[in-house]
Amino acid sequence: MLNFLKRTKVSKKTAVGADFSRSDILSGTMPSHVAIIMDGNGRWANKRALPRIAGHHEGMKVVRKITKLASELGLDALTLYAFSTENWKRPKIEVDFLMKLPEEFLATYLPELIQENVRVRVMGDKDKLPGHTLTAVDRAIRETSGNTGLILNFALNYGSRTEIIEAVKKIADDAKNQKLHIEQIDESLLSDYLMTNELQDPDLLIRTSGEIRLSNFMLWQLAYTELWFTEVLWPDFKEEDFLQAIADFQQRGRRFGGV
Ligand code: IPE
Ligand code: IPE
Ligand code: MG
Image (cartoon, rainbow, N blue to C red; front, side, top):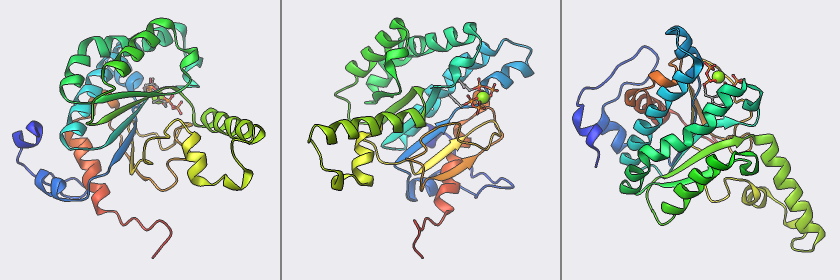
């Protein structure tokens, strides 16, 4: 437990971020659910004159590191944006590679995830995933279904607008079939029809690579989430960056519209 935290004792100071020591973070209010838009793999590869897929491969190792840390910190859920409904626009060779990554990731790290009591979960339109991707993902979901630690939620072929449309369709259908009354439709009911139904809304959203946008990610769920952006490209993202984001989160005053 907390191996990474024990290894490093230094406190860190940056120009923009809050000062933090690891023990301060542990004694502060932890976000329950952190979501990450893992961006910048292509640019990381470009800078090294490597093919874009090399960036995705490197990014996979960061997924492992950050999952481990999130688990050690005792977070309830970590949602990772791995493939958007818009990413199908990319060259076939890149899409094919991205669809093989979950398999490679799970072939390498599933035993470790099981050992760490992590429960794998996926949100997105699974019907459009290639069979081999689906098989790997379903196996991981099955084999970790009894785990009670961190929920590792992969957004795979996920788009927030599609998610909302699908929810609205199901609600309309249930209303038509008298399973619910229109008066029952409220925020909590709509949340239950979304792909995040069993998860709390994220407390903290991280986006790497300097892009300041949401790119169709969790538009409903992020209504009151604290947003944190960094120029760091995803393959360069370190445990310290994650801890910095949490330290900054702990300095924020969340008012939810109150005073
Ligand atoms: C994020 O990195 C990974 C996915 C979107 C799958 P990118 O591939 O978007 O990297 P950049 O933004 O082109 O650098
Ligand atoms: C968002 O990144 C999707 C993922 C990280 C999976 P993109 O790189 O696809 O987003 P845009 O195109 O820059 O908005
Ligand atoms: Mg990108």
